[in-house]
Length: 110
Image 1 (cartoon, rainbow, N blue to C red):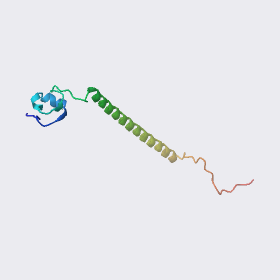
Image 2 (cartoon, rainbow, N blue to C red):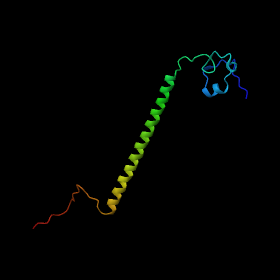
Image 3 (cartoon, one colour):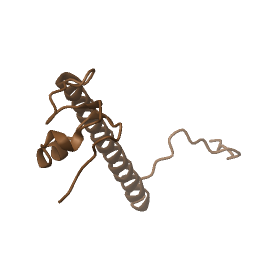
Image 4 (cartoon, one colour):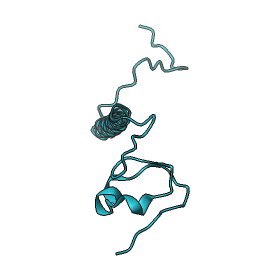
């Protein structure tokens, strides 16, 4: 396979899979902004620490999204369960009218 990006004025970090597949420096010649393996230039502003922070941020965000999804599922399940109980009680005649006062009912006098 032939790969050559020389003299294209490219910038940034050379991706790891690309660098390991094409490790001849002449393939990347003429691109002063490229850095990383297989070139001898280190990348400015890109460190392993910032990459690790980004990975942790993604992991925490994904865990938060999963937690919120589980909370929503539990809430929905509880709501349906509560609704089913209310329906079963009403079918069984156990529904109570708390606070119900009949109006216009004549009182008996003894």
